[in-house]
Image (cartoon, rainbow, N blue to C red; front, side):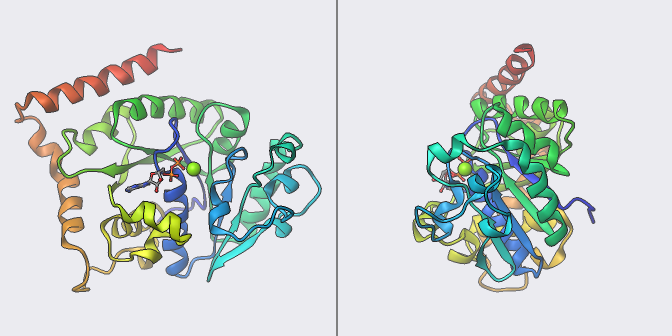
Length: 292
Ligand code: ADP
Ligand code: MG
């Protein structure tokens, strides 16, 4: 069981599944009875706005960081036990924000909620780096693609520079036919593998439905994996997927086992495709290291 309660969900590359991970980790824990706040610290992009009914003059994190509203004013109930603090979409308001005020917002939320998830923007701007140091631990999100892994190395460096700690790696959009061992990717980044979320068309559909994936398709492979991740990360056992249910998707169980054992088969593998993919990842990591 972990004493960490504030997590930054971060990646080097955009579009890898940070917001999906933030929303579904949060919702899985809320369904398990934990009080959760999710915060859109990607100030320029308003990732959580689709889950909250905002009018153009609704109070958002922009107003809080501009010093003209309280955290409570920008807090919206998403479902039982879970609230969101969205960013606004107005770039003029964004220009007024002072990211340093995020420190007070996080302290405020930490005292009110069991868990706080900060959805962090990609890249290396000040607003991106700040949450990495404010969180108790950083959850790295990456697809298994070499470019994304390359950028993850940078996020690890940024976390270290900002005085933060890495919780581990979540691989997203994984495919059963993938050439790359998930454990091996985590090993190469020298972080632990927290979970692997399979590619699942329901992820995108749930965004259009404005509903968290774990609610939209609770027994789908990605939902099951997100609940497993929630339990793994926090130790909240109530968040774990129900393995007794006959509706649980067998393929996801198989996939998870494949993740756990895939490194065993790795050393005996002589498939050129797989080795080529490994080389790509290796060189991506080496390149990231030599960038500094
Ligand atoms: P980020 O916040 O890192 O930019 P998002 O969470 O918005 O990334 O995800 C980017 C896109 O990938 C979205 O269209 C999302 O629906 C899709 N996506 C995320 N996770 C999965 C998944 N496991 N399977 C399929 N599509 C996914
Ligand atoms: Mg996002």
